[in-house]
Length: 138
Image (tube, rainbow, N blue to C red):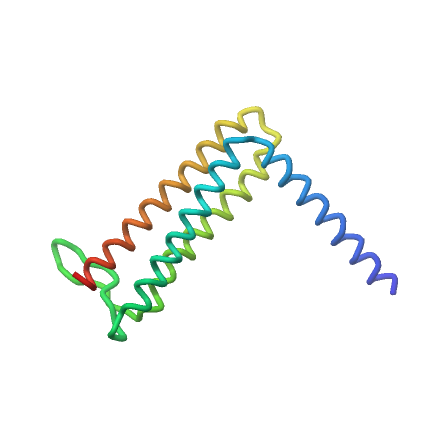
């Protein structure tokens, strides 16, 4: 019984600490804007991936096309879902890094750098999805 209450106490304190740090990070306006843009971009990635998945008629799709060599990667349709999942991992890693850099005096610069790079990664992943769509459907 004592171990259960200790475990509950540790979980409660961890939850309070995480929400406290998250509140400190979200008090910056530019971070809120970046997070909204990142989550909206990730939602667009998931929706476009779902659209490609539902409109494919064959079991195999072209996943990569190279101008020099032509088609060099063919796989199942489900492998397209790696792209938005990778974007979500990048978002979580950037948020975790923001938590770790919170107490530094150059936090604003680091937050702009991390979150802007996340937006650029989302943009390139969306371009990759567009190219997958164009290679398979046009």
